[in-house]
Length: 106
Image 1 (cartoon, rainbow, N blue to C red):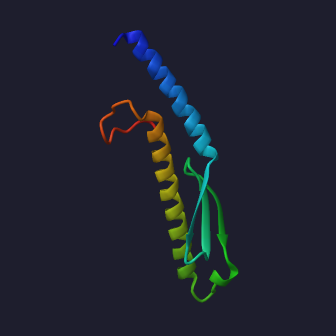
Image 2 (tube, rainbow, N blue to C red):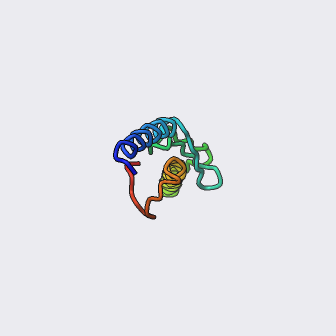
Image 3 (cartoon, rainbow, N blue to C red):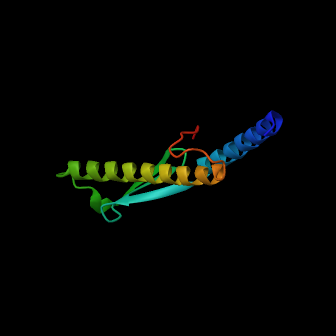
């Protein structure tokens, strides 16, 4: 394969990856904990956008339970965002023949 063709393909791939990253920065995912008592929303660039807490989840005598629910919701939504990002970016790089587990900048 000639070097100019490879460089052109690399530039096209970089452009596609940047476009997909920009799209994913606007893509929101949600995760709920405690049967919907706490819901976190994040974008696929790993930014938390909101946390909703149902009033019945607030018990002044059990703040620890609410903290655990918030933590679970945030952890779950960030995991979901990362999985979505990985899946979408893998679709962009599909067919390149990259070795499994190769970390690209995403």
